[in-house]
Length: 115
Length: 116
Image (tube, rainbow over all chains, first blue to last red; front, top):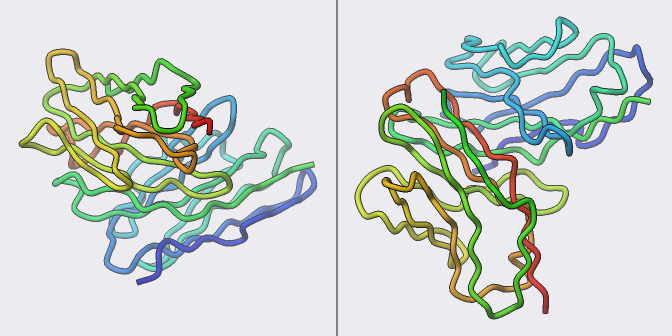
């Protein structure tokens, strides 16, 4: 069974450009999470979905960030316009059975560099 | 509010020696506790979890962790460290009472370096 798939693995862009990160969760998982990892702030939860519905987006840093999950097998995280401080590794993770302590399965991450 | 503390940014240990990576937590009610490992340029990988039952939990790659309710700790241990164990380790917690609507809270991570 394939794990969580993220694309692109690396993205280098210039300030002001739009960035779209993509995620395919593990089939059958009903929770999807977007995290951001930086040296300074560690691992931060941005937003999470349950059954394709956003549950908590309080971690989204600004209105420049948006996330969608149009179906159970696909999610996007969009930054428009991007800024140098958005440079980070963005992880997508999925899980099921959260009530019973289901663990998260992480993708390999998308490393974003904004020049 | 839930929180996790990993008091050490870095742990150095000689190969073959036992290792401990510390974690303390704060939640309302009983906790679900997790350890994850991250190798360079990779995503986080699940190591082990405590849900209920035996306080000593065994996980992948020979790691284990002990849940101590009175000290609100969940330290990660391994009897004999390998150079290949060198990585970034994250502790995470979720409060049982709020499991239906509260995601995992991660610590800041501890970098383990095993020296040959």
